[in-house]
Length: 113
Length: 115
Image 1: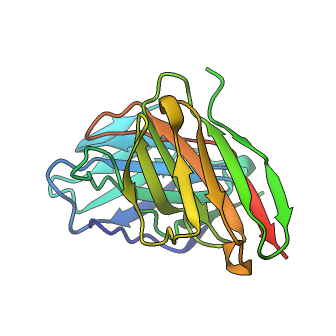
Image 2: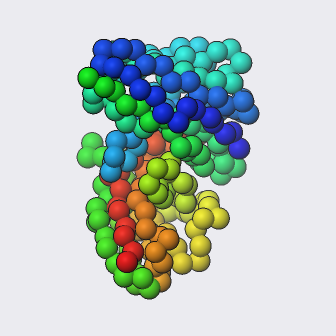
């Protein structure tokens, strides 16, 4: 199983760029890297997904080096509403074709005014 | 797109009672997942359906837990003889089912409190 390691918590200020790095040394060849955001008392929300190099959408960027053993979620100009838990996941394809998604404890980002 | 819905949002029960939760996935999604989440932890995988077939069950899913997805649409998760340790948020997610990417869309969860 591809396990991920990410910082337990991070603090930032409004308007700053936040980078959260996740380690996944045992990532398999076919695995994608996915990041989710979760607010209290809500289900996780998909942010971004990538396989290699860089992916950007309207919310974030995801940087993946060539060896794919880590990835960095970049949140540009965070606001107070970005305070949440961020999970890095590596898809563990089941033999059945589905995903036994392994969530770690996530990174608690706290954005201050 | 109405998203994934779960019912009820909150459930309080006494130890030993049975409870049942319902999940309605996004209509065109063929995969459905159940997770359990306790305070301060990430969601823990419980079980997974491809259409109506239950293809994977976690060891966390004791004999008191059963899940169904008749006709490959909505799903139910039943917990029999609830224990205080079952108190948690139960999350449902659905996906289109691409083998490698499988982006999951989560519902709001059902918070269970066992007294």
